Every structure is written in C-alpha cells, then in structure tokens.
Image (cartoon, rainbow, N blue to C red; front, side, top):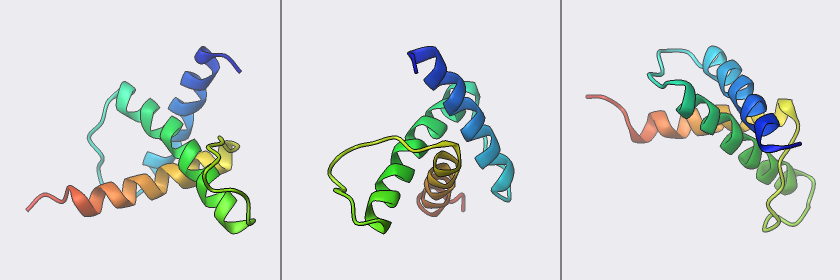
Length: 84
C-alpha cells in the first residue's frame, strides 16, 4: 500500500473511531488521518501483546485493529486533555 493508501486508510479508520467515541472531538482532516494511522500501529502493538508476538516490532494492523487502536488513543487523549 502506498502513501496515498495509508492516508485514505487512516482517514476512514480515524473517522469511524471518532464516530464510535462518545462526546465531541475537535479535530480536522489531518488530525483525524494521523489518529487513524497511529491507531493502526497501536492496534498492532496491542495485538502483539495479546498473541505473544514481539512487541518491539512495529507492525500495522487491519482496519478493525486500526479502529480499536484509534479508540484507545482517543480515550487516553481525553484523560490527559480534559477541559476544566
């Protein structure tokens, strides 16, 4: 998959993760895309922990893993950046 494929993949994964997360996330196109791409790598890390793979090998996951990873990033981000 080329760079354009990763951008499109990340955008849709980030968009679905934002739709599944309750509340409002104020982020634009670029942050949504980065969320999906980063979520893919977080999902790969979590999958390697679950199935006893090498967690130090960075690997992307499929679409479901990218959405789960993006949800994890949204939850962690909401903990750190709560508005008071």
